[in-house]
Amino acid sequence: MTVKFIESCKLPTPFGIFDMHGFQDEQDPTKEHVVLTMGDIKLDEPVLARVHSECLTGDGLFSLRCDCGAQLQAAMHKISQEGRGVIFYLRQEGRGIGLLNKIRAYHLQDAGADTVEANERLGFGADMRDYRMLRPMLDHFGIRQLRLMTNNPRKVNALTDLGIDVVERMPHETGRNPHNADYLRTKKGKLGHLLDE
Ligand SMILES: Nc1nc2c(ncn2[C@@H]2O[C@H](COP(=O)(O)OP(=O)(O)OP(=O)(O)O)[C@@H](O)[C@H]2O)c(=O)[nH]1
Ligand SMILES: [Zn+2]
Image 1: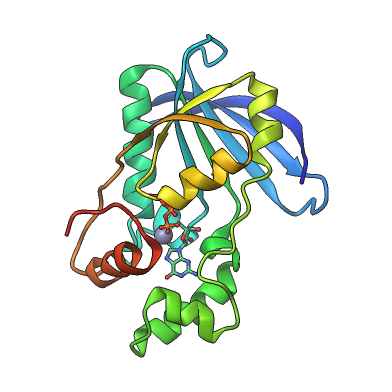
Image 2: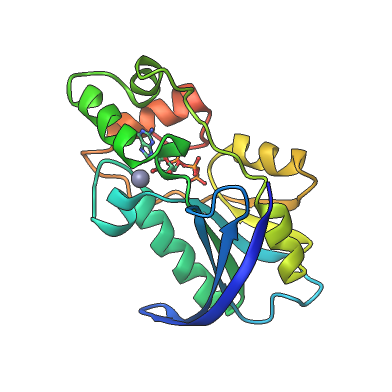
């Protein structure tokens, strides 16, 4: 999987001014990925990083069903505090099943299925994401080592398997609320996320 760099611009946010960089998937041009950077990421020092998968509901519509929006904001905040870091905003909505299938999965969850069972009933794996586009993106920026903000050891393993050097996992737990308590329990129990109860 390869991506091509398209263009960069400034992105002022409540957390400071980021640079926003657009990439296009060369196999599927409808997949448009975004990278936010702050500070001198080319310096030969591990970069504070978040690999964030698209969640329109959590990131853009304030959904409390998950923890994505809070995690995105926390990543932007931590990067602005350090003055240096990168967020890969990957268009892999619904752990790779897409927005409409995620709505189908939420419908099944409304009727009692957990997040993994719902995906499986729809004929999908629990996690269909692919991180191969990160390799050309990291090369584009000259980033060699990541301090990765995540609670997901499988994500760390997936990146390591791609030859990406994750020198540190930074716990990134935030956004717990009564609506996502069961969801977080399932992420811990079935998907192996390192979360406190
Ligand atoms: N299919 C499906 N996708 C979901 C559901 N809830 C959140 N997502 C998607 O899950 C992705 C985020 O994955 P998570 O499992 O929350 O977290 P992670 O990225 O693996 O791990 P962290 O780095 O710790 O956040 C986003 O693409 C969301 O759209 C759900 O119930 N069903
Ligand atoms: Zn979410």
